[in-house]
Every structure is written in C-alpha cells, then in structure tokens.
Length: 554
Image (cartoon, rainbow, N blue to C red; front, side):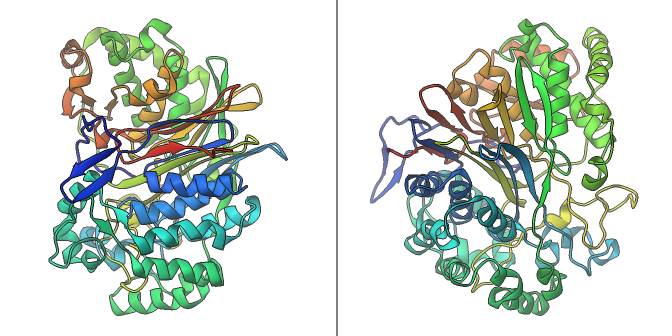
C-alpha cells in the first residue's frame, strides 16, 4: 500500500476559522486534536471519522467503527482506497485478550503471468488489477469481531455517496494532476466534471453508482461482491475490456489471513506491528538501531539526530530490499536477522564508522509511487484497530465499472517481474509486496498508542519519527512535527522550511542528496494516532491531509 511521490506538498491552511469562505462555497476545517472518555477515531478524512464516531456512539466496538470508517474512506478518498483495493488490520481485543493481524492482501488473477503484461498494462487499465480484497477483509472483520450488522456500518457511506462529499484542496490537486489519465481510462465521469475538469474546492462530489453498490452489499452481504450480482457485473466488464480478472478469481473469495504480529521492546514499552508482506520488521530494526545510540541523538530537530536517523532509515530500507520474505515462509523461520538485537549491535558499529567518513550514496533505488490511507480506532473498552488500505497508485488503475462506481486497483505494478525466485515474483494467485506498518504500543498489558500511515517506504519512517517524538512531546506535537525520509540511495526528503537551516547542510556534507519538500508535505506520510491515558482517549489527525479525530460524547 503505497504513496504518491509527485504530489509534493500540502501547505497548512493559515486561516483560523472553522469554515473557509470560498465565495458561494464553504469548506470545513477538520478538527485535528480531540479528547473523549468514551473512545476515539482518527482517519485521513473528517467524514470518515464522523462515520466511525457515529457507530461508536451507537454502541459499536472498535472493529465496527473501523469498518464503517474504512468503507467511508472509499467515498471520501476514492483516489486512495475503496472496494477495488486491499486492507490490512492490526487488531487488539480485550476479551479474550488477543492481538493479531488480519492480512487482507489482494491476489493476482489466475490468468496472470509475467509475459501477459507489459509495463503500461501493470500500471493502467483493466489488466492492472488484482482481485479486490477490501470487501472480504472488512466483511470478515465485522462478522467475526464486530457487533453491528453490515447494513449498520454501511449506512454512513451510503448517505455520503448519495449526498456528496465536499471537494478538498487535496482532492482537487490530485484530480487535476491525474485528469488526463482519468480521461484516458473510463473513470473521469465519476470524479471529474462533465467537461472533464477537476471539481472546484467546496463543490459536492456525488457518487450515486457507488451508493447503489453499497446498498446491494447491505441487502445481500459481502458475498454479492464475489459470487452474486456485483461479481457478474465485474466479470462482464473485465471480459469486455480485456481484463485478466474473472468470475473464477472472485468466486475464490480472498478472505483475510490471521497472522501473528511482530513484537519488540523499546524504551520500556512493547511495540507490536505488521509482519510480511507488510514492513513492520523494518520498523523493529530501526527501533533496535536507535537504541544503540545515546538518547541525545534521537532528536531529529538537531543536526546529529537528523544525520543518525537518515542513516538508520537508509540501512533499514536496504535490508528490506536485500531480505525479502514470503509471508507464509516467514512465519516458519525461527530466526529473523533484521529484527535480531545482535544484528542491530553489528550494524550500529558500521553506522558509527560511516558517519565519520562521509560515504558515497550509491546507486538510486527503484521508484516507489502510489496512494494509501490509514485509520485508527479505540473503543471505551480498550479494543483497538489500526487499519491501512489502498488501491496502490493515485486513483488506482484509473478504470471502473461505471455502474458500480469504485476504482480498480493497480497492484499488478507491485510484483517483481525480473527475478522469478523473488518471494513476490509475478505468478497466478501471488500476493503483492506491501509497505504497511499499522502499529500498537503497549504499556504493560494495556494499549497506550495506536498509529499508522500511508506513504510506501515512508510509512515506516513516519511511524518511527512519531514514536521517537512521543517520548518527549505531546501527541499532537509528535504528529505535527517536521518529517524527513531517507531512501536506499541516500536521498533525504525533508520539510526543509520546518527544520533548522543547518540540518540540510550537514546532511549534504555527509554525502546525502537533499530533496526539499514543502511544509506539511503530502509525500511524507499521514499519521493517524489514538492514545489512551488515565482520563480517556486522545486522537490526532495528521494535518498533511484532510483528516480529523473525534470520539463519542457519551
């Protein structure tokens, strides 16, 4: 579940009012920080947060609220996720006490082979999509661990699709950027004006076809997507447009796999995160490396701290590329070198030598692009869900079955096509490699913080920086703070204007390439965080997108 690397910036709105005047249009300014004694939701769009809060207030648990918000994000952020994508959940249940991953990875169609797709086919059009797994994953979570009906949790999404969602500055910018590709596909009528242009900020994006699809799911159940009317519409459309996905792929139903999460101790706390095919092991390695250095060097606002973090980020990214693991095989391996503390000791010695000699940054890595969203929910009983979902790149494959109203993903671009021995090599029924890292931090046996982010390889580095800042900062300060990211080639992307001006100079002196990003950069993740303290629940929505945090009033 991956990032957008060309949409570079989201500048913070300088206005102080709750409503920004746009002539005859008015747009809501989301609430970024919230408190409630009765539970909390934080999502990347304020309407999705409202959906979760509505379900929590009606007596739903964290799973109910998360599923409601996840469906709603497909309405509010159709460029990022939806019924045509995939979802991964980290869940903590109080009774019985249990923490686990619901791996809702999509799967390549049965007819997909490396030779069946050229580079363009993997990224655009009907051939680019894997089997959508978000409906199956959310339906499974709700049926097994929720308390509300599917119709209950879909109700907010149906209302939103019918009445319309306010177009934000972010959605307008992304739809303007992708308008040509949307027109080249067949999705332009769903998300652009009748003249093929981006909607104005504050206008209502109404999605009647999607509302009807949700209503069908509410009446007939999730199976309708895979074996019923919706499945037949998908099959017919794919057949008419040369897609690889067909009714047999759908009928196999990509129910999620329950996996054991990764866990490590850090700074007196227990950090639990996502195993392969996700990227939680990179987060674990980075935390272990950070602990090898004096706490004075953990501060990215200081030149030494920024330098250390950049090198740790580069090391983690390199190790993940060098040590890919099939998700099924990883669970059977007793020793995992990346997450071993002894390995962190060895690597820390190397990093100390590197920082003394200004290294050659090396060759550039392959580009990573895409789009994703994240949400976090805690209920009053202490159940927790951290959920990351995506349609891969921005607006996915840029195609949709028009009378169903949702975009198909383009996860066929997320496989390895050159090395047939690679764990994520393209083959029928393979699952794509993902960068998700939904995370829960425990103090003792009780969840303290849950968080996650979109952003491809920037997911883990965003989560890492927030966790480090939480040691000395408030939750909002930790999320709002300036962010940086270093890739395998030593290219450091950072919100330059929000860091001390000597930090880029120091990084450059040590051989890092500087990639200047604007304040509150869309590129550098979007963390949705919920914290539980002794008084209740604190929610923080990252100001880099359109999110908000809220909880029930009673």
